[in-house]
Image: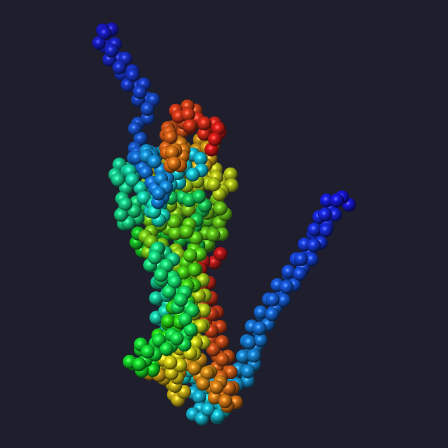
Length: 281
Length: 289
């Protein structure tokens, strides 16, 4: 074997090794760059760089008050309702700056759904709950809505339980069912992203597992960012985990973001290690 | 018995005595309040029924107030027209103002609106009547519509206040859910907040209508009254049930007082019917639980 041939062979081996190690480059759907937010004079987030990729579940963990929810609600601009709230830095959706004008924010929220800490179904029928987002775009006949409503309920794993009582009030469902109904309501408008703000904190363990299963089921179609108090949950469901902590002046900072297994087994930052080993927080 | 058991026993005996005393006290207050209410209603019912005949609803007061018989047909119709017009003016304005205060208003301007609403609630209705008299009646004469204006001013702050409170009772989590789905604020208000608050809002509206139905003072200076014939044109002076009750009650004739009692019973009945109807429709508009 000539020296040159040997060289090529080694090089191609190396390329193969690198390629098998690194999966194809994931498509970044949500990204924040140097995001700062304030409530009045209080800085809630400082220079946060978060990215969430398609087909992956990104978990945000950290102690109470570290800005996890603020970060999540900055993405779909729900914090705009809070008096004195302002933000600087960039929020990108599929590489494009997210809109900030009222009409643009409405369009943005149709693409980025949200699931809240407590199930918040509307005081109307199960069917009308799921159809709500679809009816916002234009008037639609009941027959026109039946198919997308059923599909959404099926994706949320609720169809079999409610198919015979779609006209009943959503408030008659159990807590876990209500949360899955809220999930169906978000899924019905086919969002690219769903933001989940501690979606299982008010649910019992079985209902919690059910929601986690669902997340795994549709993560290929919808990018999920989940804020959770519960490190086990982050470890169970997420592919990537971000760790946040209060920094100087109690402003939330993103300490570390990595593949979930890496972050929990080989944390790069001392503070991450302290947190996940339970030394504080 | 152990000392702990004795202590518990002594404590609970004291608690039982206090609880019994409090329960009895509350019961007596409740019975007292209900008794006053029942007394008023029964008295009106007894006096009213003895003076009430089917002809009461189809005939007008007799030309000679000392004569027996006759009825308040023109007053009943007048009340429905005057209060109906007042409601038509006050309800949309009041609900829009309440939506502004509860959903959009922030800062000094909305505080001012809220403050003036409270001031307006406290204004004696005779003053409202005098106000409408001086800005409207002096230029355009007495009319049912002037009465409607006065009653609208009486109703407006009540509607604004109750509706604002009902809207504020709707949990913010529902607003957030709607906004997070990409609904505009307008759609969030019209499709989620208003329907959720509707039963309470309707109760508030009925209270305002009932209040307007019974108002007499502002009408004396605006609608003036008309006992002679049936007037359905709100551009002319008009009689109302409350004005006729007032006129007949102070007439000094037994026959007139009998008509006033019958009128009072009719007024209570109309308010009750309206309240039940409103409750019925409010309940129907909600999804069965």
